[in-house]
Each structure stands twice: as structure tokens, then as C-alpha cells.
Length: 371
Ligand SMILES: NC(=O)C1=CN([C@@H]2O[C@H](COP(=O)(O)OP(=O)(O)OC[C@H]3O[C@@H](n4cnc5c(N)ncnc54)[C@H](O)[C@@H]3O)[C@@H](O)[C@H]2O)C=CC1
Ligand SMILES: CC(=O)C(=O)O
Ligand SMILES: [Mg+2]
Image (cartoon, rainbow, N blue to C red; front, side, top):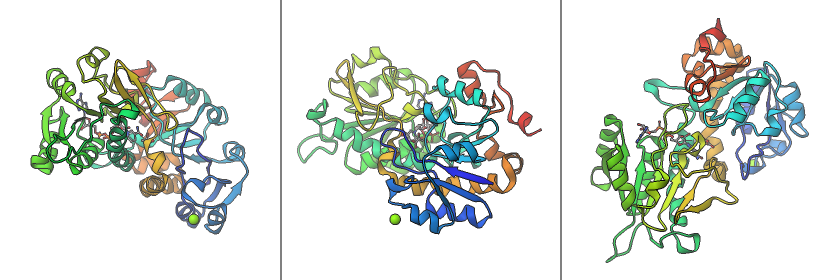
């Protein structure tokens, strides 16, 4: 298969879809790999390293979008990239379609076969291609929140760990999955007062057992959520309903009951965000203030620590990329039902139920695509 990897163009996105090591693995399997010149520079992977791994370096993204059978990326294709996609081309990347009608329309109209990292499953309903980036973003959310809490950044002027004789800051984590767990680890690690809310009793039990007295757990209902959020210095939004738009758990009205200068970090912004007042921001300009509450809503947080993130991402995306390249996407999905869960758009149709429901498309099951 001819596989291409363009340079990422989203704001401050330094990750790359294929490392030289991944390119080498694909080449070892007999595939041809094209890399856009400079695509790896954000992780200090030079064109020379890709050439040494057996890849061909091409100028600009155009040859990749024009010729390659599979395009491997990190972030959802930006408008300029979407106009280059071709019918039948495989797009293998994060997509987050449910809150992004414009992108969905473009992918449907392009007729691409779009496989979303974030909906590929693993055993027990896990999301193994999302997990490493959720670990990164969960850990980063505490440092982003701590910075936003500084007065110069609009925050309340609270040090999360406190100091001897002064109480620590209160961190409320909504959602105790991968992002929430990692956020709680960092927050507890600096000595903050941590509360984790989830609506899944098994998740509450798991985090309760792990953190013991270092974090409190609360069932996530409207009353508990309101109470916790109103006391918080830092609220981290870490909920997910796989593939679907995030539920709006903190309303604009609730901001009025919060402490002025408190900070909301909405990690779930890539699925539309779980605070009513969230709108996606960029690493260039990560925060804004609504009703005295600082919002941080960067949709590609892991891009800022591209070295860590690219290798963590490639560790989980490469095995499926190899399978798709070796067997073709249909063969790979027939052989691997977890990979089949990743198919979101095919042949002008939406093949992921939550995306279809959220955006009002007819849902076409993946079995139809594989028939
Ligand atoms: N902004 C960014 O750069 C990044 C964003 N993310 C996003 O972070 C979000 C969370 O991802 P993961 O932690 O991997 O998901 P996960 O599936 O591991 O955890 C989500 C948790 O939310 C809980 N939940 C669902 N509804 C809830 C409610 N009403 N109240 C409380 N808890 C609720 C679930 O029970 C689950 O435990 C996703 O939208 C993901 O795409 C992930 C990585 C980077
Ligand atoms: C998951 C995601 O949106 C990211 O890593 O940027
Ligand atoms: Mg190097």
C-alpha cells in the first residue's frame, strides 16, 4: 500500500502521524511510505532519518493527498486538507466528528474511508488509541489549571498545594476515566484537595481504591456536581460518551455560584466540551474569562509535549496501521472487530451511531460497509 504522512497544520501541533521507526516498520512490511518534508521536525525527526528508514520525502502535502491510498495523521483534517481528500482514500487519524458538523459534511462529501482513532475499541470497552493522549492531557490539565489560577492569568491566586499553615486548593475532576485518573494523580501529587465525580459505580470504586484518602469520590448527579463545582478552585472536565458530543454538565448559570477567578479546564473540548460556556481555544491563546471564571479549552493539549505524545501515540496506532496496510481496510476490519469500531465515515455515509445521531445523519452500520 502507498501510505503518506503530511505535516500537521493545526495551531501549535508538533506531533507527527508516523515516527521514523513507524515508517521503517511499514517499509519492512513491503509498503511504500511518503513523508512530507519537515513533518517530523516538531520531534526532531529529520527528513534524513525518514529516508534512512526507507521512506520517500515529498515537498508539501499535495502529492500525499493526491496519490496515497492511506493518509496517516494526528489531528482532524483542517479545511485546507479536507479539500484535498479523494474518494476511497483511507484517512487514519483523530476525527472527533460529533461536535464538528463542517468536518463531517466535508468527509461525507469527499467519499473518504475515515477511521477515527478515538472510537477504535479494546477489551472491556476501553479506547486504546485515545488512552495515551488522555494520559498526557489529564496530566497536563493540572499544570494548565495551576498556571491559569495565578493572578496574572486571571485566576484566584491559589497555589494548588498550599503551604504549611495555609489550606491547599480544591480540585474537582468530573469524570474518573483516563483523563480524570491522570489529572487526579497529578493534583494529589502536588498536595491539592481532590474530588473525583463519576456516574459509573465501578469507576468510583476503582479510583476510590487507588487513591484511598488522597482523593474523595462523589457520585455525579446535578446536586453533587453543583456543590462540588461551587467550592472548587480548579474544575477539570474529563467526561466522555464515546464518539458522542459531550454532555453540558456545568451551565452558564452555575458560573455565577462559583468562586470568582476559579478555573475550568475542559479537556473534553475535543468532543464539544462539558461546560456550556466552553469554546475551543489554541495553545497561542489558551484561556478566556466568562462571568469571572477562567476557561482553558485547548483541543490538542498533547501537541505541546509532542515528543512524549508522538511516541506514545505511534505505539498504539502503528499495529492497526500495519494491519490496514497488510490486509486492506476491509480485510483488517473483518479480522479485527475493535478496529471496525473506528470506521466513522465511508462512501458518503456515517457509520458511527453516536455521530449519526448527534448530527442527524442516517446511520449505516459498519457491517454494510464490509459486506
Ligand atoms: N483536549 C485534549 O487535548 C484531549 C482531550 N481528550 C478528551 O478527554 C475526554 C475524556 O477522555 P477519557 O478520559 O479518555 O475518557 P474515558 O472514557 O476514559 O473516561 C470518561 C469518564 O467520563 C465518565 N462520565 C460520563 N458521563 C459522566 C457524567 N455525566 N458525570 C461524570 N462522569 C461521567 C465515564 O463514566 C468515564 O469514566 C474525551 O473527550 C477525550 O477525547 C483526550 C485527550 C486529549
Ligand atoms: C485526543 C486528541 O484530541 C488529541 O490528542 O489531540
Ligand atoms: Mg533526531
